[in-house]
Amino acid sequence: MRLLKLVPDNTNIGFVRLRGIAFALTLLLSIAAVGLVAVRGLNLGVDFVGGLMIEAKFPGAAPLDQVRSKVDGLGVGDAGIQSFGDPSTISIRLPLPRSSDEGANNALVAKVEGALSRQFPGVRYNRVETVSGKVSGELIWRGIAAVVAAVTLIAIWGIFRFEWQFGVSTFVAIFHDVLMTLGFFALTGLEFDLNIVAAVLTIVGYSINDKIVIDDRIRENLRKYRQMPIGELIDLSVNETLPRTVMTSLTILLALVSLLLFGGHVLRGFTSAMILGVIVGTYSSIYVSSSLLISLGLDRSRFKQVAAATDARKTARANAERIGPRK
Image 1 (cartoon, rainbow, N blue to C red):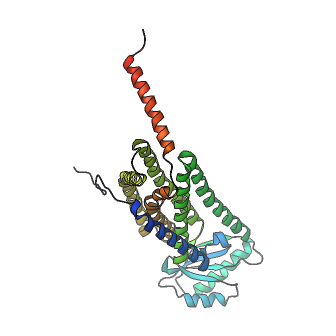
Image 2: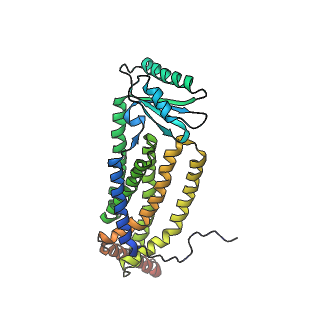
Image 3: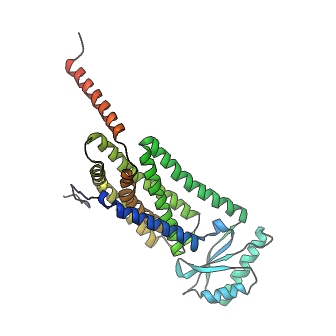
């Protein structure tokens, strides 16, 4: 039985010669992502902004205007109402009452749910969440700190594991992946909550795994092909790891697409972020991180010295085995 090969043997794609286009596209997308976040902002969930969130599901398409008019007439403060997941489901965000104890929160929720149930029979309430302003502020800073710490520590690890050029290129590529995720949520208006922070950290982990495999192959080939031009060597390394990269990305995408289709709207934001992260992570590993090593001036002298020392040890060991122990 023949094995399925998504990438043919002896593939020789010139990734490096496209690095100018890839760098320009990466810069353009990064600027667009920053602009979207700055102009449109993120649709922060209750985890980050505090308040009450009621998720309501209607028998048919949710009448947003009528719901908004009804809730505004209750005098519960500035309410945010929008579709959530599908046309029949909406999220209703309410500010916390002045007396933000559990009794006051429950009374506010009961007031809103009662009014909507009387006007829209058949409406169901899937969940209610409450987060205080203090807790939400702490969650914002902790979420930002977690992402920044993950990206920075991974870059530092790359510097000590390989060379500083590898660490910098990894940092740039992963930072690009995170920016793409933020820009996607600013563009689509999907809710950005703690689940998405977890998705971003998972994307960082996936991206570094892919990049380290390619970087390790580049390092091996730097020792093996000491006279090969650096551009050809990077192309060779990326092509050698391409079957593994493509197969890993596709198998993960199959699982994520299944989760997106059948996992329900609660997981839709998380799954969407993961799918985008796998795609942009694969792109940045192949076109950005590897080719950036050339622009950063990767020095092969250290790898030549290591390879020469390794060859000397192997030669000495072979000579010792050939001569044998002295009698």
